[in-house]
Every structure is written in C-alpha cells, then in structure tokens.
Length: 354
Ligand code: SF4
Ligand code: SF4
Image (cartoon, rainbow, N blue to C red; front, side, top):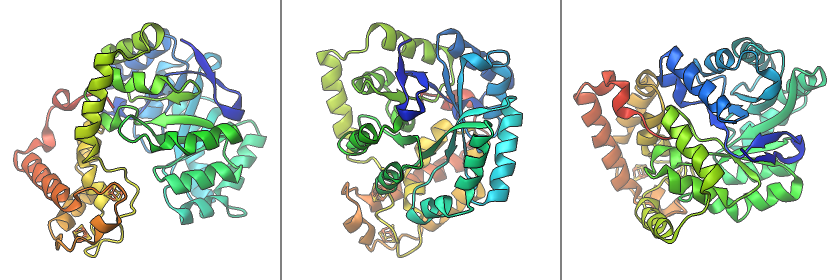
C-alpha cells in the first residue's frame, strides 16, 4: 500500500492504518488474527491506547517479531508525571517493545488540559525525557475540539494531531488540515467512518482518500472489513457519480443530527453531559458491552431524563442541532436497550465498522 510522510516525524505510514478500539470486543485469538491479517495486507501503522483495555497487549502479541517493520502509536490519558511514567511503562510492557514510535496525549479537548500538559515539569517534560532516551520516538496529541486542536498544532510541541474527520464532519478540511500542512504536523484522521454511524464504509474511505497527505485509522474488527478497505485504497480510490450522490444524501440525512462533540452547547442548566448522551449509539457500536454499560453512562442518561426543555443549549450549538429532541431519542433508545436486558447482548449483533 502507498505510504505517506507523517508530517515532521518523517515516519512513512501506510495511508490506511489500524485503529485499535474495536478489537477489544473480540476474543484474544480473533483479535490477533485480525491484526496479523492487517500486517500481511501491507498495513504498517497500528494505533492503540493505554485506555483501550486489551488492545495494546493483543497488538503486541500479533506483531511479535515484526518490530522493525511496523510503526506503533499509543496514547495516554495521564495528566500528572507519576501517572504518565506508569502508563508509559505499561504500554511498553503490553506492546512488548522497548520503544514506541508515536506517543500521544489522549483526548485533549479543553484548554486547561492542554495547558496542564505543557506546564513546566508536567507530563510533556516526562515524555520529552523518554524521547531523549529513545523510548519514545515522536510526540503527538489527539483531540475532539477544533480550537484546542489548532492551539496544540500551533504550539510547536506536537509532531502529529489526531482528530475526527469524515464526510459528515468535514470542517477540519478548511482550517486544521491547512494549518497542519503549514507547520508540518502529521494529520491522523480518526473516526473516518463517523464512529460507525455511516454504513457505507466504502464511500467514507473514498472521500478521505482525496486528501493525499493524511493517515486514516478506521477501527478494524473483521478481516473482511480490512480486505475491503485495502482493495479500495489500492485499486478503486475514486468515487463514481452514483457514490457521490449517495454521499450527499447520507450527509444531508445524518448531518442534520450529527453531534460533533465540540461542547459549545455547555454549560447545560441541568448539568447534562450532552455530547456523551448524544454519542451513546456510536460508542455502543465500537466498545465492548461491559465498557459501554458503565455507571457513568447510566448517570449521564439519568441526568438526561431531567432535561428541563429550557433550550439554552440549542442557542449555542453551531450546528443548530435539535438537542432536546435528540436527547429524548437517545434516552428512549438507551432505556429500550437496558429494559431488553441487552447489557448481555451478543457481540456479533453489534459489530460494525468504526
Ligand atoms: S434544554 Fe435540556 S439539555 Fe439543553 S440546556 Fe436545557 S436542560 Fe440542558
Ligand atoms: S450538541 Fe452541538 S454544541 Fe453540543 S457537542 Fe454536539 S455539536 Fe457541539
């Protein structure tokens, strides 16, 4: 598969990499088979995170013996130096390697978190020391919030940024990607299939392949999925007219009710974590049931049942989403799931593209 240069890291990664969230839902043997198949099909870029439970360890097992041939990226949520050192050590152990190619600060979506990472003697200093010792080769960041992402890219402290980009949420093409090009920061596209909400993965991938200098990391769970994606990248990267009009149709239907997790709608007068509630279905499609049905999701939904209909959030949403209606829909979807005792739902019925 064709490779691209990942900004000033100078790492040459395949245009499509491996997103490591969904393999948590598989058995260990299934997960190892999927990762190995990706490697055999020519993929050389594997992304995971300290927070994705079994993902790092499974990738480590699958790629044992191929260290020099692959580029491994992982992430940490740690925001204090002691925790970061522990996370880094854990990632090295789980991946079974003595260095990580790209170490990323995970989910930095507000300014105080970014400032905390960069404060003197903070976590960035720890990662920089690890880089000086060769344990970490490059430093990146992931975010869901465009203004925070732009500030991170402009700071000069990160060599890559990972951000959601797909044909539903495509605003990054106007500002963030040009900024990355200007500052030579590698752009890694997360949620290329809109977090599993777009059923037509082929169209979603073809849309992104127009951007020739970004790396995509779709979450891969089945061998058939990666075979299909590789075929598109290698042999049929362009959309035909029918696919273009289908893309427009999906964009119009889904786009009008698509939450971008920007949190501009906050603060909610009833303290409802609006974006968490709105994105429940997408998370459900990607995570193992035991990670989705958590106390915090129960609490978020419980809060959402108390929505006072004040409408304040809708005035602030830049996408003019009908938040109140969408919250009600999400609450009833969740209640339906739990009342049917689907907390124990079989994995096979919820699998899908990420
Ligand atoms: S309408 Fe509901 S969700 Fe929106 S701010 Fe008011 S209470 Fe919060
Ligand atoms: S509801 Fe609107 S403002 Fe709130 S997180 Fe979603 S897209 Fe952003």
